[in-house]
Image 1 (tube, rainbow, N blue to C red):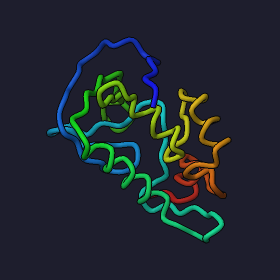
Image 2: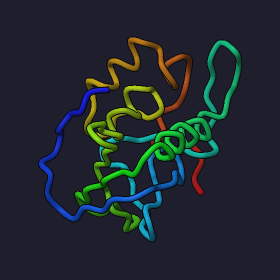
Image 3: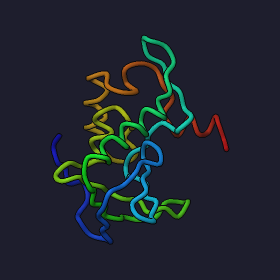
Length: 144
């Protein structure tokens, strides 16, 4: 995986072991962070590929949790989302986690990471291996 610097490193930074809440959110200490520039399938969202329907939202969370279990992460806050969560760019060493999730097809680009989305789509990785609704569309069709 290649490190890609989409944002200048400024803003508050926190480091430590984290756990996935869902495919694009994590808990680092007492903080809930949303990964900036990406949108992963919702936890209860399903997708379809050649083998049938599968729980792509749970798969995305598991993928992120697997990465987070390897080593501490460093997250730099960029701003707050409409729910008050910090939007962050997170790294694990020289790996840009936000970009890595999109490149693996476990999230789609949401304002950034278009090149990584093109790579995932071309490689038919993750959600791009079949049919799916973009997470924002799925949320509109399945309000809480």
